[in-house]
Image (cartoon, rainbow, N blue to C red; front, side, top):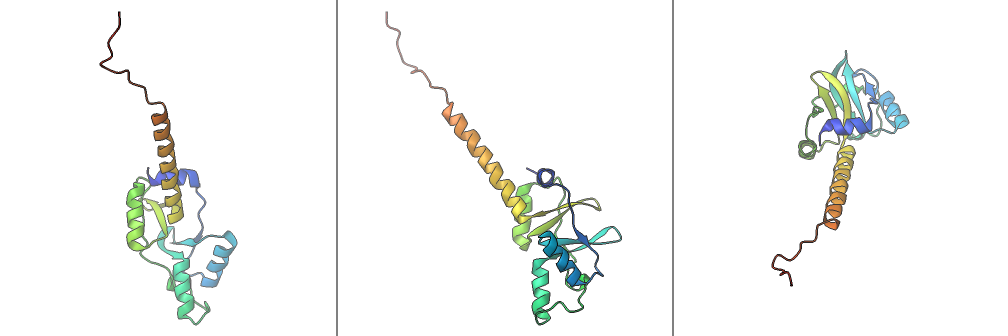
Length: 154
């Protein structure tokens, strides 16, 4: 299974923010849309990711408020990315190694979507459920072998 399979099911809705936008405005968007990340774009280029992890760190560092902080001041400016052709097993490994919950999907320099660890886990579970059903059907329909040494009685 590839990342493209997840994007096909998930759809292409993307929420982005500019690096100069106020962090408070970005949080408002995340809250209104019930999303855990925003892709940070500058002049059509991916420049970072803003996730609840960066937000929490910024709020704690700033004594419980966002103040006048901009997105650029807290974003991950080297986000982990993948392509639509990346295998799901590779994405799982990459996300686990970096503790990444969100990953932009890129084709060259074009943003194709964002997948979350939830999306990956859901795809893996659905794939395993399908495989499990196929195996059970195969076992249920297993042909019964005739005994090979059976003699024909005359």
